[in-house]
Length: 226
Length: 191
Image 1: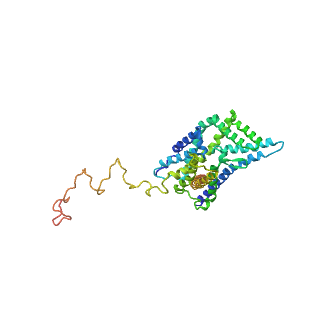
Image 2: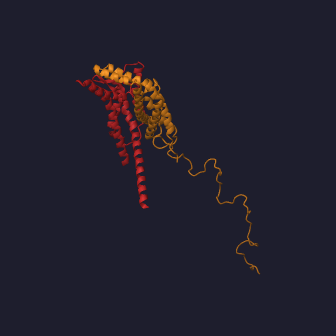
Image 3: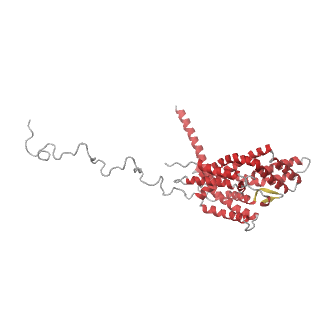
């Protein structure tokens, strides 16, 4: 029975990809398009899983699980790379967004309050706390959108539907035939109980074991005396 | 089959609830901020801060998945919603797809439709994005919402089967654990 391929390596590759793309500044802007890199990471994981499963078609549920696992690995990569980068630069990006929103507010008191909160993201301790909070929420998004990416990847890349190709599983062939290159060679042809070559007792003698004319019972004559 | 239907109902209910919360949150942020902006009186500053802080926290959450550019967003009064128009269209389309999904005859299915429909559903949103980005034409909030609706609606049919299959797997695993417990108690009682 063929076992299903492990999801670890595909999820690791997909997770490292999405983690790197999500952590590197400027490139991570792609995630502003509905977590694009996370979806891509999940799709990469499902694509690798499909390639590692030559007999069994990968189903949508397996795509979801490998995508979610890729999200877990991606969040770990983001923790190592992305959080320090966010603390250094990302907090300023978020603060700028809040500044932009505050400028468009009609109420000056509300706008001032929002600007005060936006400055909090740029402080030392506040920045670290916010960075870890961002990682926590990012992890949830990575797992969720990674699963979605995995399912979409299976829908897009998996061409096999339902049963494996050829209608049979395992691969077609005589079920009990000798394997190729068998150490015992091929079974002999002909009757299974025929004389093996070079029998140790030679060929049986020809004719009657009791001498004389042939036949049994002996024809005529007297039985042996004595 | 009965347990599979049950798993499908559980998966559907969970996804629908999460989607309602997600879409509702995009509208909640401007409502909270507007509430904080309209409080008057001696304690208005503290009250403003609480409502604004709540709205800002919700908005910061959606900042992880969207650029939130005000000029690309739908406005509720004097505040933009927490995501851009295209993202809102995608999420709203997904919610609408979920609402009609039980009546499509695919409720408990674990296989998604052919990928041609997924590709076709992504063409409008891809063309709208590319056209605006390359300067071929000027897209609008309406075109972003409409193309997002189509893409989000289609995504339901390519994600729900996988979620149903995952729910069935989880229920089966919990059932296997229950059977193990039963056999364990039976074995101990027989001694």
